[in-house]
Length: 311
Image 1 (tube, rainbow, N blue to C red):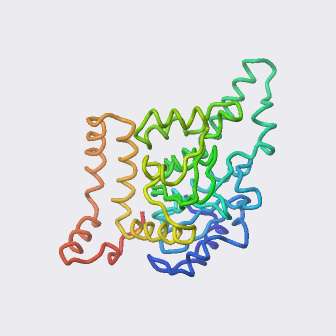
Image 2: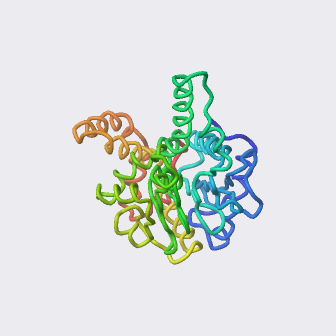
Image 3: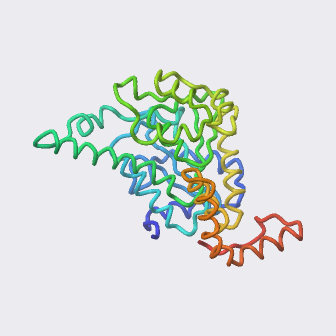
């Protein structure tokens, strides 16, 4: 599926090298606002084969309104089918990553579902919940690796979002909060399912989900929620782009196959994962990327010097 012309036009303006300079990092936070047709997201291409998706409601602390839940699905569906994109960086405009769900905007749909009786009302509520679950599942299902960069607050739905991403980075001032119990509900769009598989301690996951206490950057790093902590947002975005450039410089056949199989293995036994991997590679090994990569390695060249076909 090709990206809409208007979105691809916005992306093409920002092409540069695998590893962008400081000017590209500073340009990541779009002062021009969301990228049409989106109203909550700014989409750009700060480096070759790297797509940057920025939550862009800074005046509302990037709170997730109705449009956001729909636009994330549209955006990542487009990215998944875009052969020119090999890796995605997700961030939030302004001082915080996200304040979570926009309760004022969402209340009417979530708290007053339609239905002539209890069964029909419940059926409609289930439809609404599964629709919102898709907003973050589409990130996980996207074959392109997704690096998320968090600064400041990451609350409620923000934790649902980042746990669906592949690599999580944050600033020293970042904090994370599974907020849902404080507003009278159990988190229902991914945190309770993904966070236990991200953090090794079931006790810690239970504590965070049941008390809604804040987890700060150092603890997030220690527990495995994030892999790296940076002193500020600018340095973090430079690090995120450098990492994205390293990923984008590798064979897309190898990179996307790795993501797909990591997620499959997470949810299946070792034996099932090995069987799936064998089936996967019986076709994926039949690519010129293997010979190209092997030759570059023997010549002590970086994979980024190789021209790989789009996937």
